[in-house]
Image 1 (spheres, rainbow, N blue to C red):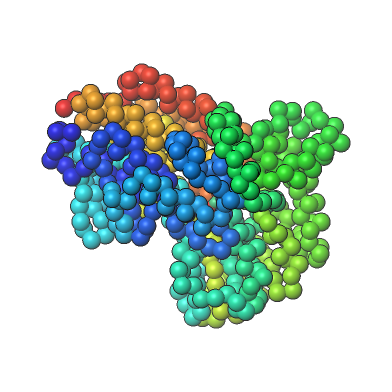
Image 2: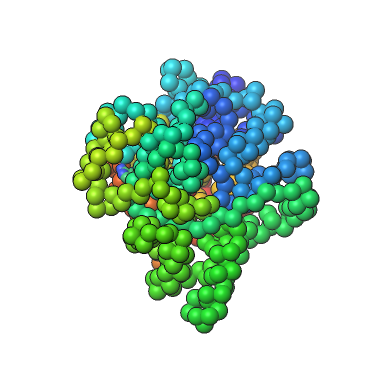
Length: 538
Ligand code: NA7
């Protein structure tokens, strides 16, 4: 630590969500001087910001949390198979309390720039009040969906009623009771919001540009007895997660779609449809994700399910996605979403060929109609994955700007590091697994912590990825993504956000290969004593 004595900290962590929390826990165990800087007024990240009605897991609660502490697994009880945001936030608060983490967390601190200082092999961070912080190692823990984006529709600021983005749901939001409410967007967030507020609003207008595939969540309560069983099963649950492609408990069907008879196929799909959670997304044959014909069949199966739940056939057709196949975008799970459109107080406005022309003082104006509203909710998504990085001025070696490094496509080494950005580690940066995110976080934090421990013990003050390493890794990431139908579709996962001029082109934002393969490659780098990196000793 003496080599770092002139610096404020050994390690700075940006973000107090799950990534930041576990990073802090591990850095403390290494005996390092560490501080978490967080823009929000409290810990929780995604679960702190996303307080919209109906926000909840659509992965099984007990598989989508930390596994690193046996004590936590022993103590914490989940009360629902798919926990609501309120419960998950309590879990996060319980963690920070249990491990006394808050004394090293600083809230209301929005980092504006992070500059590498060549002379001292350190990072200099500056916050919104121009306060500065220096450290040897920098851990970015900013999350992949953290920068909300408003639609690029003229007049967004003109609306005289109340409007907000779902990720910034006001703490003292006006009651929706009896109000004329409009919502723009039909992604995962919108679906959870719509199905939750439809009963309590006076009238709800849903503006849909792209219909999304969604299927039943089938959430149920967890009784204390059932929780006991889950607790006993934890080792099995986490083993299953680690062994599977994207770290979920659901097991992929090894049979291809066309090797089953039509009868077998339908029986299999009906069985999955009846099950809770991502079974119908992750328990299917994997050729549905790569073979257009197989995907069409499975999409048709779901289209019929949608039609069977909507009374008005014209509305039903609008809700059946036509632009992309099932599972080629993130499939949100719903609880009564389709039935909402049978309610007399809910109107679906298809804006795919009748675009919103402007937001006016009184509401939303499409090409052929005006909708007067009291409240307008933007469920319009995020500047995903690279958005949090772009919001901060990252300057590395020789003033290299991270934005410029990624302007022609993302490049990383292992999704954890970038050349020219020494001593910087990204938890949930681009090119990492986006499947079961807590599993990815745990791995990335363990890997980073091992590396920092190694550096610390060997008096290494400087570590940097190489050009060759970045080239090879980036090529590998692209190779893994080949043949996946999802990569032919615009979504936040392929880096597209139509509200941002610079994000209209698809890019390879995530690691598409199997998680065990990802971990193996990263483990090998560790086994080679990090010789893939340029290192300088103090
Ligand atoms: P998403 O999935 O990015 O969804 C955003 C939605 O907002 C989507 O339906 C968009 O339509 C719609 N949108 C965005 N901008 C506009 C404009 N300008 N006009 C009309 N409609 C618009 O974000 P979510 O927050 O729902 O979910 C993000 C992830 O969080 C989710 O995948 C889960 O992993 C958890 P589009 O499809 O672009 O036509």
